Length: 278
Length: 287
Image (cartoon, rainbow over all chains, first blue to last red; front, top):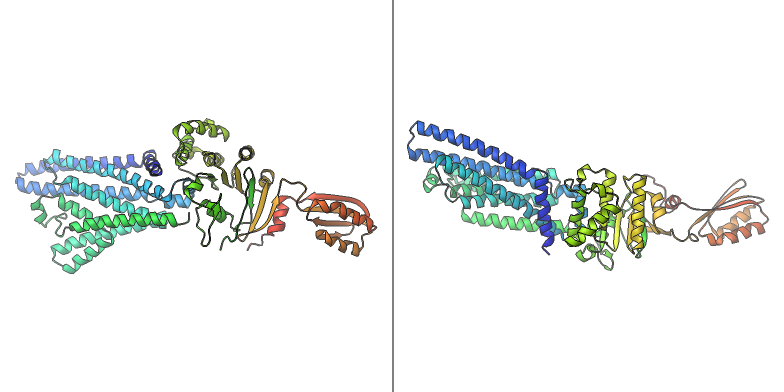
């Protein structure tokens, strides 16, 4: 019964390799890591040259490492959206899906297989990017990022959430509309997340509520904020002078909410794909 | 409502043509039988079971109109993928894939990616994927679209070979000349309902047109033809009549002679499928 799912997983992976999607993403990621390592290297040199006290140096370099992780997060989210945005809507529009959907394989197997294929690809990407940024931090600045695995897992959950929404919208809308909706939703989460942070720093409870509501609509960016919170030292968490200070870190309940959100979105996607006309 | 009360009977080893004007509901009907579209009311049954069930899909093959697939796959990989989706073992695929590539004339292109295929080659590989699991019933939607004359002949031969092995072939095509030389039976559909059928195997059956060149044909004699004829048209000495079958022609001939007409020629013609189509379905008035 699961054979159909694994066949579709294999097809999705093979597509990513053949169409050079994975290689292009890894190349872009590699270019980013090279640039990031070079920047970190020269900055570390300058900080030593100006005899910046080790404590301040640690905080500054930790903050820049957070920027590196954030860039990896953005690249991974974009990879999740761009690789999957056309997978169902494009195949439905072109009629390619007809040859598959008339084979003895259930529609849920097609959708789940594709989802797992993309999820696997994104997992490889997030792991490599986080390992890369973590390695740069360790080698260039000597800083070991705390709870990097948990932070990476949260970012991966964020990517899965965005991927699931892309797959869900792909069962309803055309490729272009799907892309606009998902990027719009993630944009809403992005703005909401930052509003929440700024509101917490400026002590504006109503604005915090606006941020929380936007995170409930789309909890993707909240997961990054939690990941960032996890990957900072306890002292850095209390400082509120950097963009990643996480003055208002999303609660663990928000992680649970995001998981439930993902499961429900995937269930709706499967249900709608099973019921819709092709 | 695109389709209603549609009941079609296709026997094993029969090539069945499904004809109708644009918008008649042909594609919707085929999609419903394949389980791609769900009926708004009632149900569609294929091989005695609800259409679209996984069990039924094990027994059917489908070539979609204007076949397209992942352009990054090679011809062999495409057939292997579809074979695996149909549950074929690696051992079975090792035999089946080269045999099918040979059958559709694509053996020299087995390692070529679909992105390099012409429209005709795509159509042929599409036909091969529909046959990969040796189905009992095959739906072919415009199988000769985009093919050159050699390709059409090849597809015709493949379809006939399927008939020989007892497979039922459901052919949806606009190319009436192709249907006429390939199909055993055709039905005509209009506005979602079957409006006629025709058996192309029985030469004795079917509507006939007779062109009679005769003199001394009285108005009463012409009117008397109505008992055998579905249409009567007289222009000077030329009388054109249509009968529902060939069997009545000797009787019509005897009647004309007995009425005292001088008959110079009595030429029966079978209606072509195109004429039959226009007669049954009607002219396209753009509505």
